[in-house]
Image (cartoon, rainbow, N blue to C red; front, top):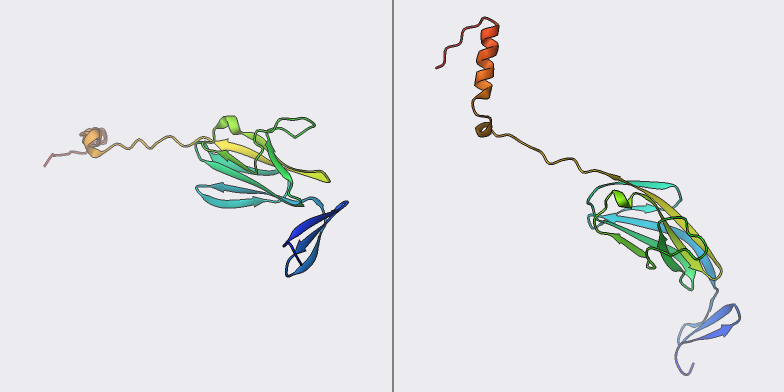
Length: 166
């Protein structure tokens, strides 16, 4: 073959010409196998394959949502906060949605949409945010002073026991 690889359009089909391997038929496909990969703490923790999936995360955590779909040519991937309708504005027009510090404002439904001229698919995720527990307030023995000894002496006196400090 002279001229190297190329693509020849044939209506709804495209013939991909390869220099050594010969011809390969490329058929347009609507999006299928839509998934959402969920990552936090720099680890992919979960893959969502169906609607009505829910996720609970601690407030303040970073969350990364990756939308993926199989299609030919590649589908346009977008994120929405409400179910996508005609002319809705996405919160992100990229496959990846980064939420660097999740708070209660991020609670609710997230929708990933794969749009393609031959069709589209939508997958939803319900996000719940749990408040982080308050920091531990530990009291050292120095901070307590001699209160345990005083309380022991009082309870001993109330029970009629005699205590002699040594």
